[in-house]
Image (cartoon, rainbow, N blue to C red; front, side, top):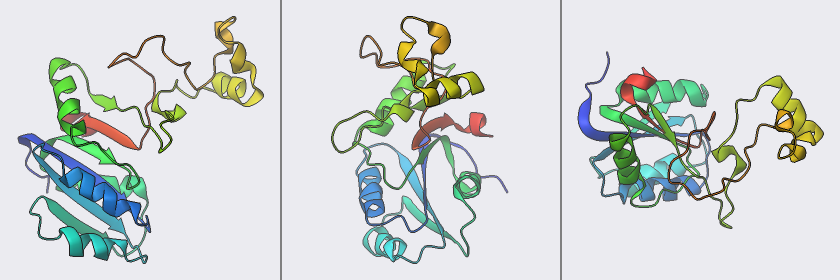
Length: 196
């Protein structure tokens, strides 16, 4: 049975599997958002006690639903399970070690609204030191690009574009939105119909 899509509702999907204490902070940050959302935490048979801690601390929040698998079925299949249960018109697939800012969901929805042709948005993933993760914006990992990256030849792509690797060079400007071949799977914002 497919869930009913509710306009203006973002379904945040977090899959856990012995994800550690950062998953509690992830849930806290999602629930601190002012956006209209539901949060589905799908646990893949964790034994680290974190899913119980999440349930104890946030279980009273009606926006949170916790689902459990009896075994670890993997990230992708658990995302599919959660998406089948989600009610939102947009899905935000979020790693349990990602910490959203309070306005991230609203900003993503705004960007998607002014760009109706957009099916999927990624974000600039930044580590605790403020360094942008290279996986935030990449080219399709074709064999030639992968070999250029592995061999180090991609460092010459400014002179010879045919030597481009998987990682894209830093953009010349700090554009809010840019087209890329691949984004990080740590935080994916996509239309329900795109997901389907």
